[in-house]
Length: 126
Image (tube, rainbow, N blue to C red; front, side, top):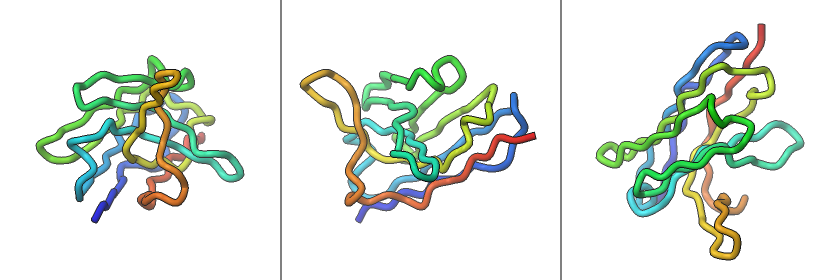
């Protein structure tokens, strides 16, 4: 049974940093690209960063240059180091597998009916 537990969120001032962690159990981590997603009220969940099983990374334009995604397969843990945080980074952050579209080569997340953890809240405010 899949379980995803996100942690590391909090309240931080603009320009600050946070490192998010996600621990996964069940048959999800080592065989899938893994990604961080975020969601704000009334908006669709957004894919923020993805790391493939081979370590290839891709970022949304909104976080590119400010964030680093990494994975530790030995510990089934996914990380997201976020720097130079801005108020518009405020969101509930989730981790989950990422799916690759062979039509256009983009990554996308599981559907809403799939399993999602509770997420970790990031609030950027002075």
